Image 1 (cartoon, one colour):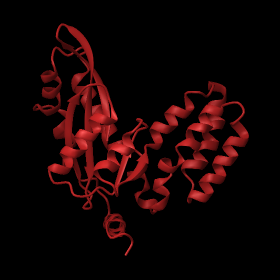
Image 2: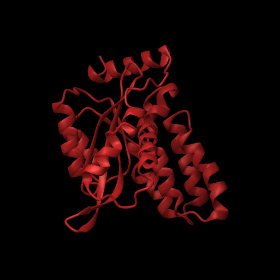
Image 3: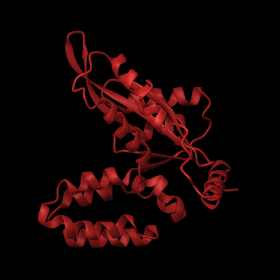
Length: 238
């Protein structure tokens, strides 16, 4: 789940609108656009209404939700799908934590950071995070704190086999959708009305058709692993 922003003319003024996107990956490995909504500025409150709509339309259970770092997003998800696990997108987290790093330190910092999110186990990841803090904590405390403070939602994917971790720890499917959306809207800096954005999404050349119901090409083994872990979660581990 993610959102991308556009400027729209409304009541003779320019306002910022968020296009909210929810994309699901089914147990059969197929990707499906669950919905696209145009609303106000990105907020957990709006996501709460989106999640309720998804549930009312028939989505019974969500295993894992990959999200960015929007405040209150996890609470909104758990209010509607209390058993869903939250995974903060590692790519978003890397972007955030490296914005504090000077150019000359970026390469060695990233080499140490990669040992955290690429670790085989959570214990090894925490050891690598200790090492990252030892090497860089005094110089870049805000970067280290962003990992420490958000670790419970950054580390969810370590519970799962390596074969499906990349599906979990990034919002790549939605990033792809957003790229397609920007392609079909690149000639517009300001939309004259909300309907124009909707036409760009759902029209004949829109990004919706290019992404929806695509098979991700997951092998039978990965699909079976996803199913087993879904069964374990939905039955409380029995």
